[in-house]
Length: 308
Image (tube, rainbow, N blue to C red; front, top):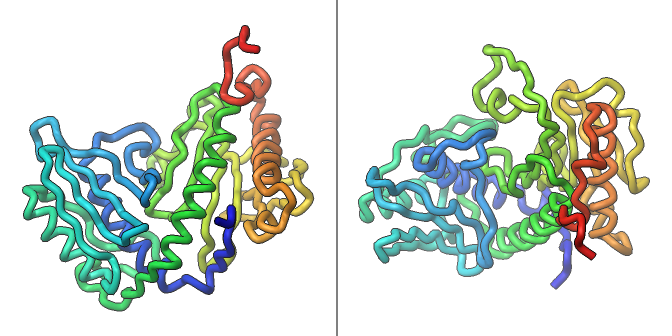
């Protein structure tokens, strides 16, 4: 199978917008049913050998311990309860409204009744999920390809994450923005304004250098690897990036380091090129924030000074 198959946004826009809303519904259930962690680490999805999982949630006597998985090989939504009960239904042929109603009916039948704010987040409309019959294209081939790309990218980001011994997030898939990210922390707390929205306040309460991948959106209609430093230090966009195809682009008053997916696909060593890009962007942020990148390095995931 091709390591990085083609995934132009125009080819799967309708399928992506439909599945993104499916993901937000399940993600909001995860948000409502899990223990809060710093920087929202409890919220994202993680890949499995067949799709995506919320990981276990609930339990502790408050409600059944359960897990929701997207099986993107069989194209089924699966709910497992830890007393052995299980229920599932097909994703194919469903509108967002149909998916929402069937999922909550399925959960209710298992004794699970989460309460969520059932409208999309930052998707350009506020149509309640239960009323959304417009988004109704689930394409099995394209959604499976999205998952295969996601899985390869997660492994690549995990390899990159191994080289840092400081505080770092897991590699995780955020359902609200539909990107995959891993974040390194410099150790400095950031003073945030009380007027800032609570999602942003928690996400950026510490200084970070974050790296990841997005599949493209209306603003930037192409998939790409990216990196940014927040808060952004003066002169970041003037720091060199590698390989030569990488560049800094303006983004909401700051800058993103970007390496387009389609450029990576045709490179002789795509994995090496992405790792080189992510490291160059990290080194730029580390230099200007003044962290000791050498001390925090763990090449190949190793900190044992006697390993040979």
